[in-house]
Image (cartoon, rainbow, N blue to C red; front, side):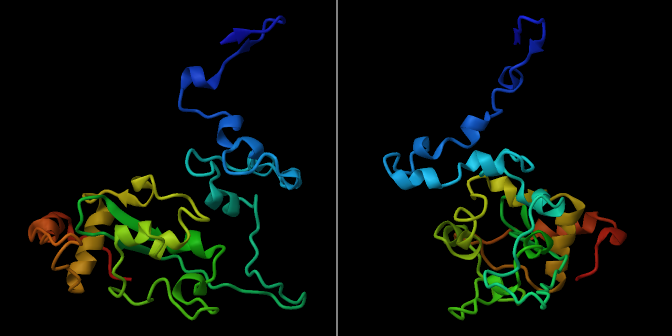
Length: 229
């Protein structure tokens, strides 16, 4: 805290919360970020990240921008395709508000994948079919994707984008966000159990506990069990 000559008290946010980062810490100059060659004369032609990002909704993770909020509140308006559409054609992208719950029987909190946050600026084909190489990141059929953390860290599944062009996966709880004992967690496991999706083994070969679903689901009131989507 400091006082200006005119008597105005100025508070340094770091004195309140040392974890708060300054603009300089969030977005260092390109010549000082350790990635770009500061002797390259073309570096001056690039926009400094802080010039484009500092006015967007903040986040304390990744590149410090809450991109979902930026899209919803109209700060940005992503193009629907990298290919320019004719002026008289409206490019429509189907939007599905459906949450997918993963890692139902592991030790970490459950993963909630929100289709809506992704489909507001990505066409389904980005993940379920890639027209150029005719490959699918995810097979659009329940139980058909053997998603494993080691594969994600190797750039497969979610790792195709996250840690590349989307927020990094170094913070587990950005994805593992649903408490197993919450209503959403219990409902997700119960729906999977009713569909016969209880796994035989974890990815490391350990058998799952038999009571993981039945004990917690039985304790939940019947009305709390949401119908399968």
